[in-house]
Length: 437
Image (cartoon, rainbow, N blue to C red; front, top):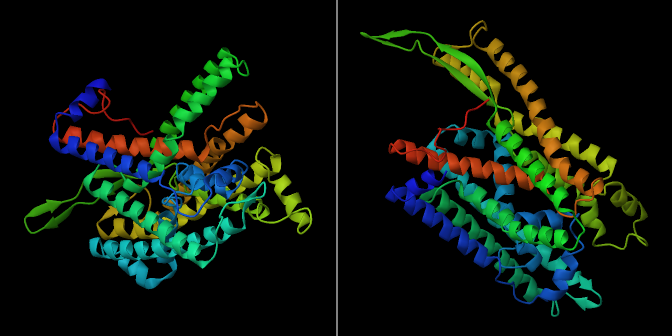
C-alpha cells in the first residue's frame, strides 16, 4: 500500500490529477462554512439537533453538515443527483431522450445539458421552500430568520442555487481533470468529514466509562468485518459466458473468441436506500412543521410507528429497498437490448438460442442476483437501527453512508490502479487488482 502511494508521485499526470482533486475537495469543504445571509446560526443549530430522524438529518449527512449550518452549499449535490435520476427515468418513457441516449457522445452531452438545467430549476424550487420553512421556524422564542420577507427569500434562492451550481461545476471539473467521479467524491467528502467528530465522541465515551474498552475493540473489529463484506459483495459478479461465432470478411476471419457478460450483484448501488429513506422519513419531516397534538393526531401516530429501530420501520424500510432495487435495475439494465446487441454481432450464450430466449435467460439470472443484492443492501442499512435500539451504541454506524464511502473508495482506487498499471508501475495493492467473485 505504501509503495503504491509512493508510485503516485512518480507519474506526473497522475500526481497532478490527485493534487487537483484534493484542492477541489478543500474548496468544497471551505464553502460549507460560508453562511447564507440573514439567518440566526445559533437558533438554526438548535433546530437541527432535534431533526436527526427526518429528511433534514438525511440531507445534512449528504451535505457534510452544510445544511445544519445553512451555508451557501446547504443543498449540496442532491439536486444534481435528483435531476440525473429523473432524466434517466424519463429516457424510458420519452422517445426523444431514449434516442439521445443511443446517439453516443453527442447524445450524452445533450442529456448532461438537460441535467444541468434541471439541477438549477430543482435548486431554485428547493431553495424557495427552505426559505419559507426557515421564516416559520422558531426555537425557544427565537426566530431563525430575524427579518423575513421577499428580500430574504430571493436572496436565499439565489445563494443556494448558485452554491449547488458551483458544486455541480466542481464535480464535473474533478471528473474531467482529477481522479474519480467528481459528484461521488463530493458526497464522499461530506460524509467522511464527520468521521473525526465521531472518533472524538467515541474516545470521550470510553474515557467517561459509558463504553468499556473491550466493547469498543469488538465494535471496531465488527466494523472492519462489515466493510470487508461490502467490498466483497460490491465486487461480486455473475458472469454469463458468451461465445462469438467466426465470420469471414474478405480474406480475414473475425470473431470466434469467448468472453462473458458481467452482472453485478448490486446493480442499483446506493439509489434504493436513498429513495427508501426519503419516503419513510417524510411523515417525520411533515410533523416537524405542524403541531401534531392539536392539528393532525394521526400524524403523531405515524411518526411513532415509523421511529428508527421500531420493527414496523425496519420492515417497511426493507420492503422499499427491495422494491427500488428491482425498479432501478429494470430501468438501468434492459435484457432485450443486450440480447439484440449480442445477436447483431454474432454472439450467443452456449445452450441458449439468440434473441428472445437469451433475453429471458438474462432476465431470470438478473432477477435472482438482484434479490440477493437487495437483501445485502437491506442488512447493511438496518444495521444502524439494530445497533442503536438493541445494543444502545451511541453513534451512527453503517447504512447508506457506509455503502457510499466504500463504493466511492473502490471506484477511485480502481482508477488510480489503472493509471499506474498502464505505465508499468505496481498498482495500489501490490498483489494486483481485487478479484471479482
